[in-house]
Length: 293
Image (cartoon, rainbow, N blue to C red; front, side):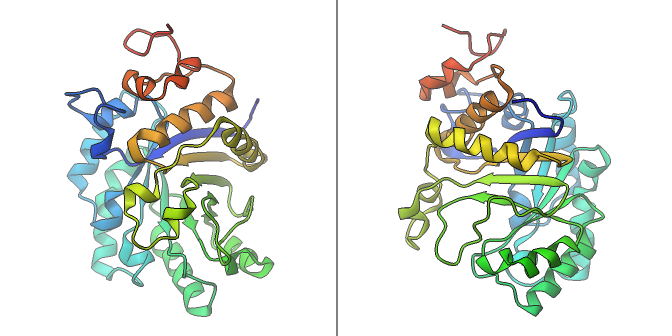
């Protein structure tokens, strides 16, 4: 596939205990530096749970300074998306905490991820308007909306007035789920792959690892690549992020999808190729990376 649009392939987070020996070689010292050699973008999960620290953000920027084109997508704090809004002081602190990444040109997206029951009612439209007002100056804003009410023509028209992007999703879609091939909102398309483990997704007792324990088949990735190509058409950029993170499945699938869409071999971590031998078919031969056998 040939594209005029800039396409970035990334993963959601880099700190998972089950990645030891699957993604990261035993004893690797800097997991962020290691992972940044294989993807174009990484989502920062920690900012969902706590206000970011500016010195930590500077360290992240320094860690990837030798990786041209690499960037981050930072999740907005859960008090913004799940509980209503941060206090004005906390909004200032959030901006200050991520400013080093923005100033270094490494903050590609701000991701506002909402609950499944966040539906289209006036109070929630007002919340989206305030989020756009408070955070769009920090970086391009993307809303991940999961309730079906946001895919009506009227809701999509409203969302286009906010100057943000709306993420396209691949996940187990229930009766009231946001389930639209291309929301058509924003210049920077964003496709998030959560996996298709429906049994765990709809089970309130399932843990995080079980919920995101899914490995896309080659056929499924082929269909997703075609969808991504449609999303990229006419857009300034497209970001594709895997979130089926258990045991490195998201990285394995994202690398497969990158190879499909670019038609080129890709760098593959040796432990990942050992865990998922089919990756040897797409692995680039390069010093320090997985040799073709």
